[in-house]
Image (cartoon, rainbow, N blue to C red; front, top):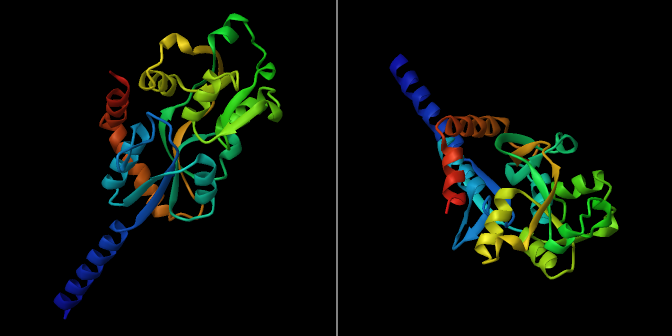
Length: 244
């Protein structure tokens, strides 16, 4: 009888592990290379690859999908067991998500066309910005005194860069890594855009999960990410996508 009970207990335990391991997370992100972007049928990039590897190590199925940032943000806020990335963790967002990370540090810069830089315009509130709706940079610009009416929204940083180069807007916000990628892969000369002034280095980039997500899943994902970080995978992924 004890042997039978032991076998049943082992069987149940295996089923529980299998059930937990089979749990699926839906992950949503925007087109923001080299952190996350579409390549063929896959979502690739530093953050996307890191999330995929973290899910594999945590025995989770993660489905990654690209969509406009504002739509992804709204979807994840209303749907348990979903992930929004690459997301800036800032004080005014702290209670909006469950956070797994950090993925990478965050420093953003204001980029302008050369003629704007030559005019030595330092007052950000005098510039017309292109921004991605609901992104953290929008709040940073408001904090810096840029009025809402001086912001033109579009769906991605790639689209914003086109607006800036065509003269529709004067400036945009990006990281050094992402802007270097955009310039290089658009076939532009490096002098086409100028790194003007630092906007902020507040916070870092994280995977942001819906508040109603399974806490055990969040913990497993964090544990897996921490292990990958110790193994040097974050640095390896950054090198893969930035060294040409």
